[in-house]
Length: 116
Image 1 (cartoon, helix red, strand yellow):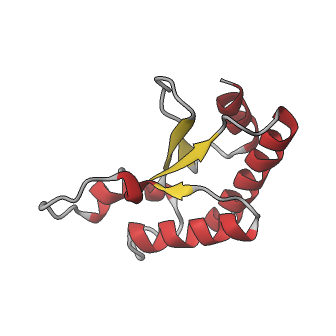
Image 2: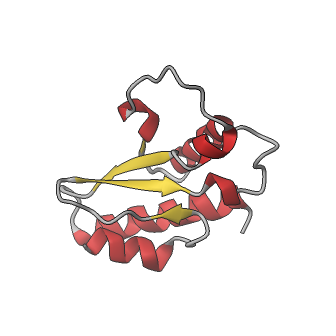
Image 3: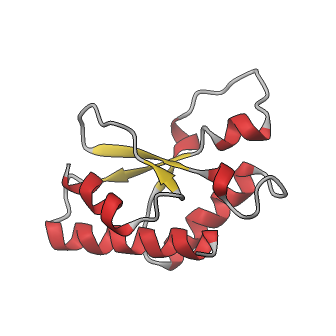
């Protein structure tokens, strides 16, 4: 729960949705692509790639949720894809001070990308 509290404190709520966790060492966080200033001009996948690049620039490694998604034969509309864009973060190893730094960096990356 500490990770969720940190996300709520340091990340603009217009950029992410934090699902209720069910346990484990990872948290899947939804990017609110539909609120991004470049949507729908740019596709959700392009926006997500830019967001992950911005996170790397801020020295945060998050795993794009598409790596955990099963292939689908159904094509998604941009709006459907926007609602299914997640990233995965791990919170099992970092001590609290490092976790806080990481979440602050996530918040900076998302604020930069959303131009807040």
